[in-house]
Image (cartoon, rainbow, N blue to C red; front, side, top):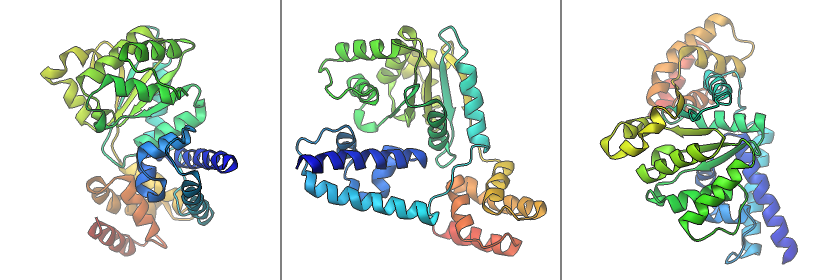
Length: 315
């Protein structure tokens, strides 16, 4: 049984690494691969906490998931991640700006609609600077604006497996660990944070030396302008380094297409990008562009229009 437990933890780590390399959050992984179980179970198993789980049954499921991932990678079933897309370039530039900050203006808000590549870009940033330099937490609405749940998630991201029960002790532990050296904390899906959790972010900015990246749809910024969030509003004012607003422009679509069709003529790339972008803005941004690319053998304008219509009809 011990060998099965060790193998299960090892495969869970490989699955998590595969997801990170493909720009997928934990929530996205469990949605796409049902055999991983719930987000909580995947988190527990990845952390080596197997109490209450049947290692033999879970191992069979996790082996199957990882075999599927390997097959997808071998077939090119998942898109390569391109670090010269505008989304990635903007976030990388903004991060280089915030790391130079010496005051409390160390919050970077990354704002964009679903599918624009926010999580992917952050994954690339972590790949470049290392998970020891940049820690990652995905916020959840099930926290119900509980700082205790938020702080527990941060501690798990920092490698803590046995969490203190009290909120004060959790806060002190997080402050201590984030103060050992300058460290960046990424909070993905940050629009799920309520005023109490956002105030916790403000406290951490005030008491630790590192950077904070809040990745969210535009809802977060709207919240920070609301009266109920007045105490947290400093995150959007004197604690803010920059708000990066991401949109899908035609040049990015053209860059993406050029990677998929390296022999295509510049004129064909420009025409295809012009046809694809309006529908992509309405139906998933890069996810839409990806699906159109999968349906294409070439960039003939008529073929591109048909692919756009077909993909849009499925959404």
